[in-house]
Length: 127
Image 1 (tube, rainbow, N blue to C red):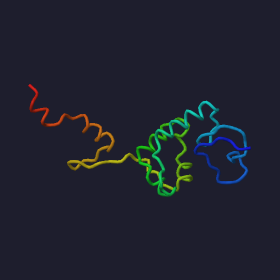
Image 2: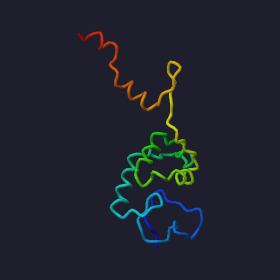
Image 3: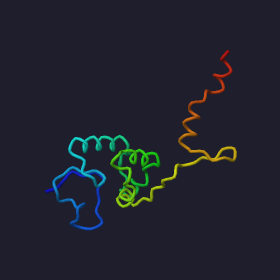
């Protein structure tokens, strides 16, 4: 009998992580049927469409922000080794940085703050 699995793996056969038991699992944890489908929806919202990409190229297309969003799922917070095993991609834990004016900033925070700035043409029209 096969179970429902999302991001589960086993480095050896026929151990507790093998896939021949009836249960709902995500990130090598039993989660129950309701939570399983909630996690499935979260992952569908986060992950890019595979399209015509080969699987190895698909995993390379996952952005740092998407990996972060996956790690934000409570059951996935300690699943880095599993993601790397499944995807074959080395995941960088460090936030991406951007250098500006000789200083390094968190890229996501920097971009967020840039979007919050008013364009210069709007500043000229305000009184």
